Length: 135
Image 1: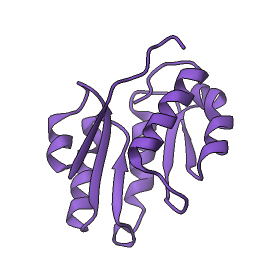
Image 2: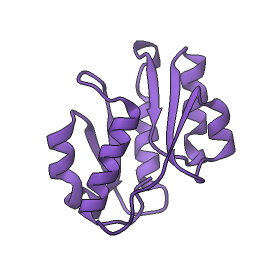
Image 3: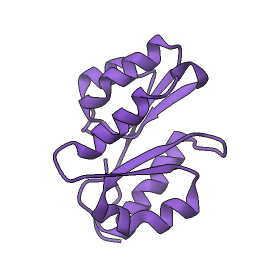
Image 4: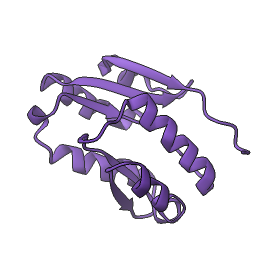
């Protein structure tokens, strides 16, 4: 969802995502990015939430695949909901699995960038208007 951006913009988008997700203390969160974005965003993430950060290797979909790996190793029956902060269709399978496990599935994506099959498996969709690229 974040793409190639600087630290200030990443921090603003991260805050929008937490707000849209209604993230609260005690929620389990995973965030993934490449090493470059992590260097820009680490201080902000650690200060604002108790999310666990997954630093991925370089490569297409590497951050998405790192998140999916974490999600597949969770016992979904211990959660109430799954929030996916991306419109990428790669997350449709985990959204389906969450629904089958009885979780409410919320998808938060930038306006106009939500894959149809991910939308299909979501119980709730929040489409964000990205902040401007310049502060």
